Image (cartoon, rainbow, N blue to C red; front, top):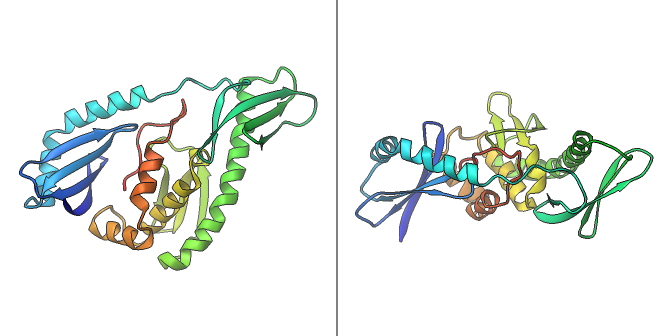
Length: 245
C-alpha cells in the first residue's frame, strides 16, 4: 500500500513518485506519451530517487521515444468519414461543398464542415482550428472565474496557442496562463484539471510536495482526470510529452 506521493523533475522530464513498503525501486514508462512513474521504498529520500533516475535516464528517454513514435495517428485530410474528437467524443466528419462562407458545427454524431468546392486541405484545417479556438475560449473563461476564489489568486490574462510540449503554462510573474489548442478535443473534466493545475502554479512553481498537497485540496480527483487526459487519443500533429502532475 502506498504511503505518500511526490513529483520530481529530472532532465526536463516530470516524474510521478509513489512511496511504498517495498524493498527495491521500480521505474516504469507508460503509454500513450511516456509518463514516468517510480515506485520507491519509503526509506529513500528525493536525492536517492533522483540519482537512480539519472542513472537510468538513457533507458527512460529511449522508452519514451518508442511510445511517442508509436502513438501517432495518420494526418488528417479533412474528408468525409474521418474521425475527429470534440470535447472527448469522437465524431465522423461530413464535408458539404457549397457556395458561401465556410462554417463548421456539430450535428448529432457528425462534425459538419461546409466549404466552397475545391477548398484545399490547409484551408479546411484552418476552419477547424478557428472553430476549436472559439469553443475553447468559451469554455475557459467560466472555469477561470470559478477557480480564482478557490485558489485565492487572480489571473491577469490568458491565451490559447498550439504548444508542442505542454498542455498549458503559467507565468508566475505576470499571472498569465496559456492553454494548448488541442484541449478542445479533450473531455471537459480534463480541461478543468489543466486550468486548476496552471492556476496552482501561481502559488507553487514546481511539482513537489506542496504542489501535490494544494492540488489534493483543490481537486481531489485530479489524478483520475490527468490519466484520462494522458490516455486520450492523439492526433497526427499532437506533440510528444504529457504535462507533469
